[in-house]
Length: 326
Picture 1 (tube, helix red, strand yellow):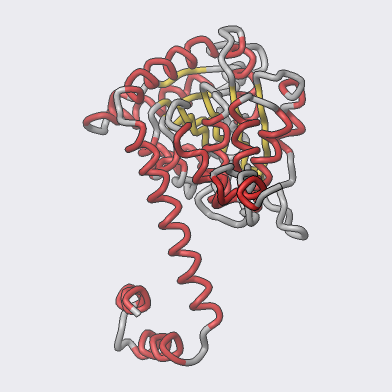
Picture 2: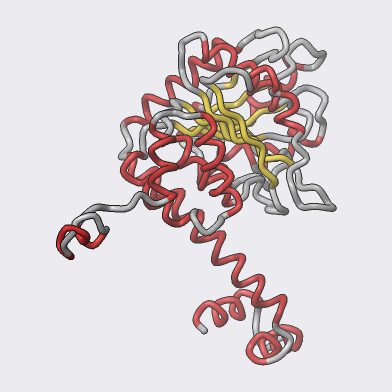
């Protein structure tokens, strides 16, 4: 065999080798469940293959609608997601679910409560559920959730339901990540309704009063409608839907509201929707880097700035700006 013949089989002669990322993408595009699960694990852990995988996914993104579901603890968000899956699957829609659970104080991993409550959906090839740890992020999400959206989008899931951890009114990260934001509440939550009025209410595209079979549901509904009535512009027109996820009451109305919002989302350039999520990832990464730098620095610039803040010579905001400019 001549050298030329030998070289004709080498990558240098134009025969491309298939990378691990290429193989994952091929399986994702075939909607292979095991490959999707493997890719999600790669993206969640941000392993060495993750950057190549994210880059290889880019040409296949922009079709899925991301529906964020947030609200106070006790609102029945997981049960509501189950009910939505059941009815959406009747229309043969493929549904991806990212359920952000509280972090274990020991391992830092997800407690997996949501996945336990969604076991009925796990045998359906048209549904993919992954629980993630919040890893202490106060906004109710972690950057891993945003990376996983790309894998589910490329796998041709029509809707991606993103359920936040349920930590209260600080859960506003979902506003930057989701295309449609659903804020759920329930009767009997007391002060949580007041918290919603001052925080979560502002990000809602759809409001849900879940557990409508309970006493006080109508009062909660009227409270939310009253809070909307004093607002202006888009917020005053946010639909309020009353549901009982356990018996299916109001789920059809909620899906109709989601479909109405989806039509508006489809009119937006998919690249712009993805760009918004990219900005969120940059902001989170920047915040993490600054926080880590501050935690590890007792000397140098950090120590000097800390002393200036203590003495009143500088404000925390001015100190932060100097760190960013350093």
